[in-house]
Image (cartoon, rainbow, N blue to C red):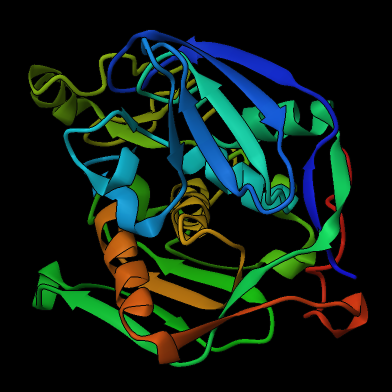
Length: 311
């Protein structure tokens, strides 16, 4: 049987929210089979559980925000995509995330710190079959035209791979890789994707902070670029770090559907908003997908049956 996975033990993290700038504590706990990934706002008088659900995403401006019941006015958790990406990269199915604020800490701006935390707690196989969402038909969402065109697509594939192309028209970014295809079955998420940091432009900082965004941002937790160059000491972690972070985000955004995916994701200039619209389009037609498990692990797509190795 290809089994569900949770943590062996509890682990904690403390950091600041990228946009709110507030100190936040996370406690990551093992969870029973079929729990899924659930955030618990433990700072509220009565703790509120907020289950990962594509239809509960209520804001996608610069990050992915999940609200209880899909109600924008309900308790929420912001900037969930990097933690969810790490969960997908390690094949975690069931996890309780206690959080004492409304924004997941940004840590170093990538998923690597979350991967380290989760692996430090250990990964445990559970006595129930792992569930996947298998894409059965091509589903695509498109917006804009010409230089403003962007699109995202899911299509059938016996495995899980992601392709992304960026187009920033920026002298520093144009010198980096513009397109990446990554196969999750390769087992190389930690080495090739997890360390890619979120991107910030110095020209946008004042505008964003006036809107109450990026208050916790710095060169310690983001890749910062001015009009011409990368400002961080040491430069890029990967030659194509910027497009790899888009893959990292997409992996987290796709896991919001509630289960790991069997299919191929591809996108051009997409972001959190279009990614969520793509999932909603998939869910809108039952014939677009099916939920599957593998009682015989050898029948699963290559690579998806392996536990991620330690660092």
